[in-house]
Image (cartoon, rainbow, N blue to C red; front, top):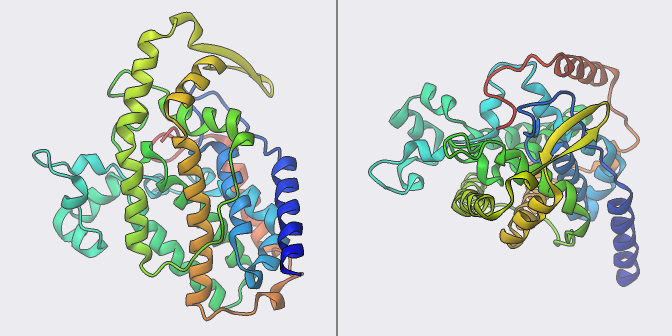
Length: 343
């Protein structure tokens, strides 16, 4: 029976991955070839969607029922940049800003929020990004939503925390040189986390096992950020080396996205870069998926493992749907608050 269940679950996962033609869209052209969201809308949606399958049976039924919500609203935090001042800083941390005399910035910046505030001031922390700490805030909110058995907030915070965790797994979310603007590589942000994912996602391996309980979520998050940052040198260096040897007229191409023709990195350049990275993008994507599922699971366990079967067949409330419609309307206006969305 166990093998039959595993076989059926595998078939479901394969089918959903194959059918989830998660459309990436471009509401407007940003710096010609720069993506307008972290991991791209495509990547964020896929991360939340596949994370559902890392959950234990006690959670899977509820999350599977709402998988379309979790998929579509994985990008709400990026849309919120257009509605809420202070949202942008929740997506990154410019850890290299804190380098002192060549020291490792992870030895310089305290992991504890209050110790970091005491050392650098709260204004400084907000100015250079707070993603590792914001994930802890979101975990607490999700845990409280489980405790209160609030379907709206479980869905909202599950989708949101998935986004921030995914962002913490992106190397270019850990540096002041977030879009290569300091090294003559402007546009690399969208190349790494959007373009490469969009054209290679169907070849990635999504069988990553089950989520696990995270004993220390803060340390777990910081270690994810640290792993992302340690990959940054290769992200920048390989692109520069490839650009030096690639025909300049072959680096970019034009594609039709909706009603807009945009300049983007050519398929040939993108795939050559992807090959040089030797699986890095897939590894960070897989790590993000497993981390999202593990955080969902941890919040549920810490909430006392409420019976989610009693919350099934309860759709999002009209109030939540109205809130999301208003957010979408503000996003479409395109009046971004805070740092550019190419971070």
